[in-house]
Amino acid sequence: MKHITPKEAHAFLQTHPNALLIDVRSEIEYLFVGHPVGAIHVSWNDGPDWEINPHFVGEVRKLAGNGGERPVVLICRSGNRSEAAGAALESAGFSEVYNVTHGFEGELDEHHHRNSVSGWRFDGLPWQQC
Image (cartoon, rainbow, N blue to C red; front, side, top):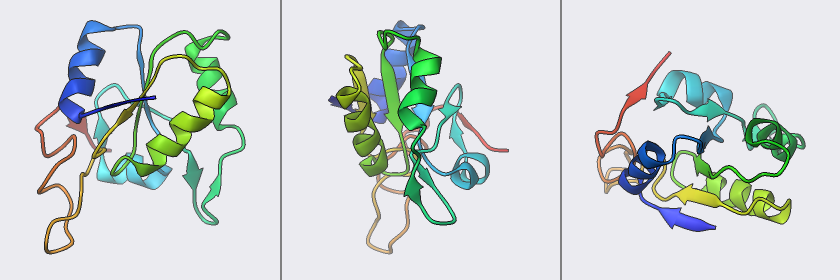
């Protein structure tokens, strides 16, 4: 798995239109916190029990095609869930998986707030909110 910054991910997606951008956060995060423009939502885990989605790999495989040959870029809040999800995809045979370091909201600052140090939104990349 390759680890890339939000800006690198955005540039990669611009030059690789066949790549998938998968947001692996919970549905509530995806809808109400916001998400990158063009991201497809497939939860890695979700409430109420926060168990790993047993259908995650299959759902991504449907989006990527049977061979799993399309590049898959994964994003979550801060880069941790997307890294775990990426490892699962690689174990399932996906050959080109990217993890967006710092994720959508970035690392915590000294006041324990996100979006002020790093992340997709902090970098001013295109995003939307429902």
